[in-house]
Image (cartoon, rainbow, N blue to C red; front, side, top):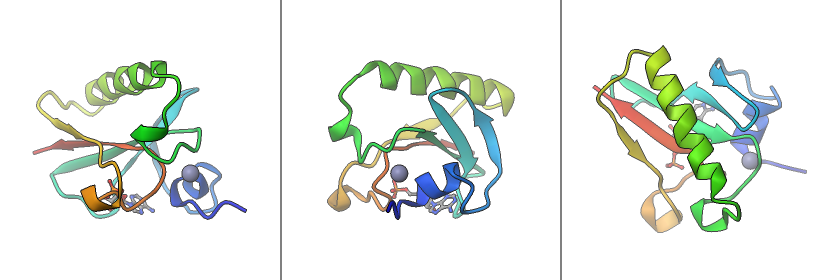
Length: 102
Ligand code: AMP
Ligand code: ZN
């Protein structure tokens, strides 16, 4: 039983529009945007947080995806954010990278 929000989005149990998808990750618009464009890049594998990443090639793949997504969305100036741990503001315990652009 997996009650993870992002796994549910991936498994289409929660309806959400994928703006990008590849073998490793997918991206959706944040449901509660904190910038004009607020995108979440989410690995398909359920990994709790950055602290649980074993193969750091995943990080390279996620940032490679970010560059493709930004090209697709005409984003040139942006911030990336990874909240790690409850006390740092991580609400969903499935690794994700925020793209924020105004
Ligand atoms: P974090 O605080 O880093 O864990 O970020 C979790 C983010 O997920 C927040 O910015 C939420 O607004 C966003 N979020 C939660 N549920 C959904 C959903 N169903 N679809 C898109 N974004 C979501
Ligand atoms: Zn998950």
